[in-house]
Image (cartoon, rainbow, N blue to C red; front, top):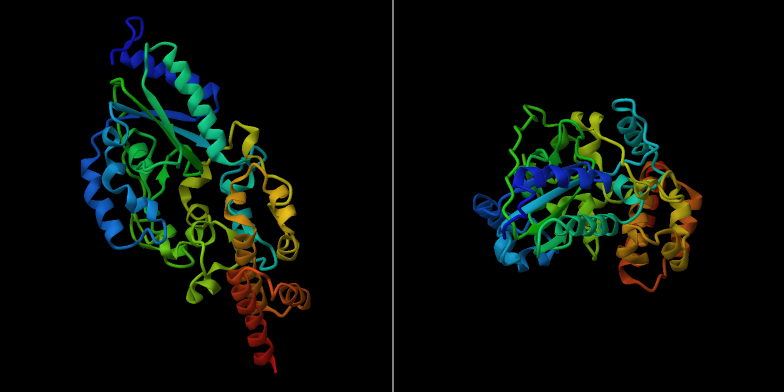
Length: 371
């Protein structure tokens, strides 16, 4: 589709960037639709089973790498980046990373990934991408468009890298020299030809910090993640029992894991969000495992309303916390933790019961060792 006469391609992209910033986005990029060079890697990753139980990833096959096949008529992809560090985050380089890393050595505290402490990014991004699409539509007659944010078979990181948002880090996430990796990505598929953005050079060099720090060694090679070992996958996407051999490695992480981002040198440049949506909600940061485990289902729904955690449900929430409580008991016996677990030993959910009994067994092992 042709662009209105009063706006050429480059001018329109510049205007889109202005509108995007007004909506809270940090950067806009433009990618083409030929992702054929990424198909072999995607196929190999799926064939290896690295996607685990995320069957939807295999169900759509190579449509992820074929925007024009996923949405017929797509000619260009507008990529959008939105920073998500809470506005109250320290602006001193590296200080926020140190504070988050220090939480990992407090076994009685439950850690929720930074991105999940505020409002559900799907809702925030989708709404603002739609508003951006409408603004563009005011200047492009009969614009065909479709907005996505982690909600469809889209190669988000690949599109972001090709549109100049950053480069693919060894942890597979997109890294930006001025913003690290603490941002969300979204896309607008459009049926107009826009001038593509230039890709940027990778700047990881010989650094392998993200690979080394991964608690479960889920990053099996640079830019290759075995999701089945990733704590974010295990605590969010995976619905069944967490593999026994991985439970002790999860530590006190109860929803997601930020380790590979916390250790990344580029994240000393991570930017705070321009929006209040991603400010930390009361009850999701710095809370004790005992407090979080005691939430009834009604309390869980109330405290997680409007946030991303709610989608895993109360039972999976308890499963995750039970693992963390078991790990806390491995380091030191705690009568209060044991009592809380014992009170949940007959929970109606089979998976919850199994993880509670495992956690109690960790305490038994500690007590026997001290005898």
